[in-house]
Image (tube, rainbow over all chains, first blue to last red; front, side, top):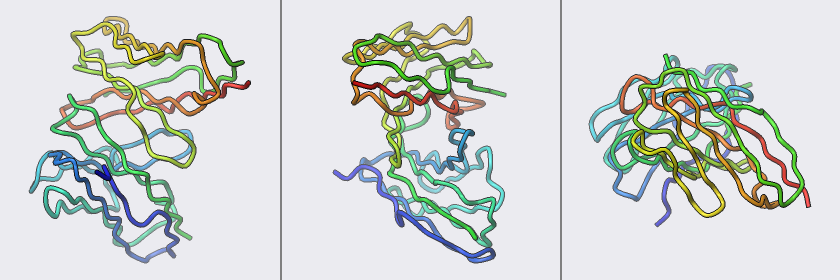
Length: 113
Length: 112
């Protein structure tokens, strides 16, 4: 049981490049989330998926798109990376919604030059 | 709009001390509050989840309390150990079932 896995662990992009961050969970959870963590600002929700087939915006969705590919996988895409998107990105999942504990992946450290 | 604040931002204590981490939130219409631990370069690990109907939740040397009326939660760590050194974050729901608002965290260092 691997829990929540994320790939890649590290990535360096040039401004304007695109990339997709992958997330998968093997706990049969319905809800999945993408957060970014910046120094001094805590974690902020980018997008979430309450269940397979649905996605909704969080606090800071601009510049990102998501896909809930199936119940296990939830990907985050940066279409045209900007230096302001340099951050650590965390994926999380929970059984249902915020009444339940969220389980986090190890994170992806992204640098945009 | 929910805002979550954690005090202090950093704390350094000798091993064996009992300590209290504070979390305050602005919207008291919450149904739970969560405490997490984050080790450097790692993801978050859930420590305790307190439902709104509860006043306390305990796990080992950790005890979390919730006072909705005052908008506060505290995490009490008994007999601190160097292995407790980490950043502790609290998170409260905002505006719906799927949005958590996190505090900036308290960075704890326990020295031998």
